[in-house]
Length: 227
Image (cartoon, rainbow, N blue to C red):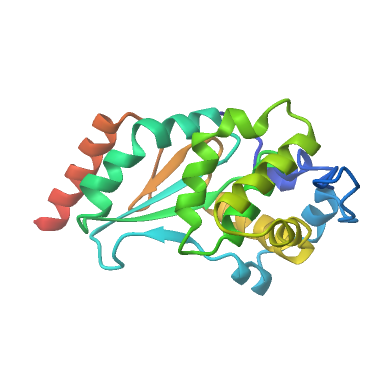
């Protein structure tokens, strides 16, 4: 999924306008009272962004760092997690060779909502919830209406151990949304991210790739570190 103007002067965040959730389980409006357009204007890469830490797998002293930039609504990102990530985790992350950092990209309000739910589950459950979100991407997006998506994401949060009230509170948290957008904007601008999934491996940016290509790059990096 390419977004060539994603980070130009905040233009990417304009596509997030109108974030207000449409309905709760009973069909009554969720009164968030703000729009993502407004959040984008207020979001700044300041101390506010400290509320949004990187989500990390692997040991801190791993010789190679892999940063993934991905959106929960991106089909190519879901495909990567279905076909590549498990092998990457088994062969490189779990073996101490790679420190893996996952950074969310918000191409639309629904990706922002999904990320909010995953983060509300807590760091210990974040990647398990992320797996659920990717594995059921087509199902929770459903007919594409905000009410359907909000309800389906709520169900994922409940399945992860949260209450419906906790999920709703997360989806109404304006300060957290501002911090998430600020952090996304700062990271994506710094690393020149214009498509998802994108990867920064020891400071070098790469586009989406197969496991064979990923493995070859990592093996080369590891060999260089071993010299």
